[in-house]
Length: 272
Image (cartoon, rainbow, N blue to C red):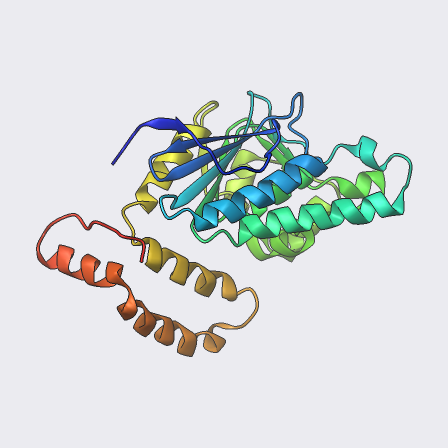
C-alpha cells in the first residue's frame, strides 16, 4: 500500500482555491479551504460537484476524505451575507447548488468519510451527512441552526439527519436549535467515531486506506444496496441483492478476489 502524498490534478476545470485536493494512495483528501470559517459559496459548491464527478471516473481512487482547513472549523455552512438582501433568485440558485454538490458527494461510487475537525454547522453538517462515515474530534460541535435565522436546511438535513439519529433528535437539533458535542453525536448515531483534537484527518485516512483492500467493483455494487434501505423496506431489496451478487461474476475482480483467497495471496484489483 502506498503512503505517498501527491497533489491531485482533477482535470482542466477550475476547482477554485477554496478546495484543495491531495492524493494519499487510493484516497482523495479534499480540504475545505475558505477561512475563517470554511463556508460554502457558489464556486466551492460547483467545484465539489465537478470534483466528485471526476473522481467517479478515476479508477485509481477508491475513497475520499473531506475535512476543514485549520483547527476550529470543519465548515460553518453557507455565508449568510449571500441571503441578506432577500433575493429569491439567489436563494433558489444556492439551494440548487447545495443540492447538486452534496447529492454528488452522497452518490460517490467509492467510500466517503467526513473528518470533522471542529464546528460543523448548517451546510457544513449537511456536507458531513452526505458522507458514508463521520469521524469527529472531541472538541467538535454539530448543529443545524437555520431556523434561528428564519431559514431551513436545504441540502438534505431534514431528510438525512432523522435517518441517522431518529425523528426526536432531529427535531431537537433542527426545530429547537440544539447543538450536540462529539460524544453526544456518537451516542445518538450521528458520528461513528470520536478522536482527540487534531486526529480526525489521520484516522479518516487510515480508515479510507482499508477500502483499498476491498474490491472496488464490489464496493460500488454494495453501497447503493445499503443506501436503498432509506427508500424501501428490506424485503424490497432482497431480490435485487441476489441479482447484484450474480452480476459480480461478470467482473474480473471477483475471480481475482476468490482465487487470491484460495491461493493465500493479496488480491491485485483491476477495478473492472
